[in-house]
Length: 480
Image (cartoon, rainbow, N blue to C red; front, side, top):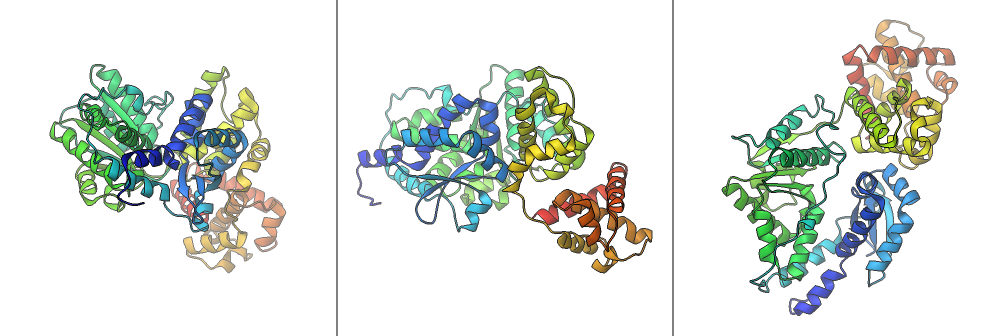
């Protein structure tokens, strides 16, 4: 792109940029699908450029990809085609699939940043009208403190969010919540915003996803309303920016965010940011912006432990039951299966429950374990990493300080029996092997021995915190 291009060319390029096209298509899709479905499945997806120059919608998980493919992909294609004057094709892949093909950051964003640099050099209209409130990202009604389930992994972040929302004096500024995808950051920011508005209705609260911040910035440049854009953000009493890492690499946008944060903090106004890593690790961000974020209160959100995952499931069933007019709870073995299968992301855990409720509605409380597994199997098959019994035996023997041969030996000493039972339990949870097949791979044992081991471990992990932690560590290790 040459630096001598005129402003009209720059504007044309912005209008037809992949980010602008996806922004229009996704906004229309949100209106059609509703906030709940869109927020759970489509919103976490992001647009990337493929090595061959094509474009790809990338989902964080295979479950999300399969849901979009089944329920929304056709409509996404229609909206994309209607808004893209260039007629570019769009594919759908998981993050793992995309990275395996050598995919990287979206070239569209880098090209777009260059256009903004040129267009931003033209003067704003002095009499620009105020930016309308619709430019803020809509808050999701389901994400409140009442529906947020706290536990050891997120209790500090939860307490900080509550404190900020109460407008208590002596607050830290900025507050940065960080954790990988699906750990509850968006829920926490939405809940904070709702509570802050309830507590102080006259104060101005602005919540933006990084995508909306970027698209608003582009639109302000296009419409010569940068002054209004700046005023809208810098007049906020509380500004919340979700997933700030996606602004990385977009120099003009980072520059504007840096000056916005500096102005707000200088005036004593509050700033809350979320990211997928600690501020110091956001190397794609400008050093000055990174320094600003690091200087505040950085709150990490850890993976939800098993008890928290079970609590989240119970709360989700309760809330959805009220919305859809049914009462009840998951059977304990079904809840345990979901909590043990979906350990990496709370959003993926909730997504699996959404699938079950979408299929059987109020009958979800009566689902047996086999029925739940059968309903979820089409969604799991494409995204599961294939784990073998041999890998489980190696990981378990290393974790418990044994030899792999010990797990298949006839020895019955407690030092061997419990790790062997744990490994059998993992084999039942993480593979598709039958009980007789698992027994054969553990020294030719009978299927009833495996069944006893599985039931015994289920009983013990509820009362033995160390065993529960061992199983959690091994499950994560095997799935990574």
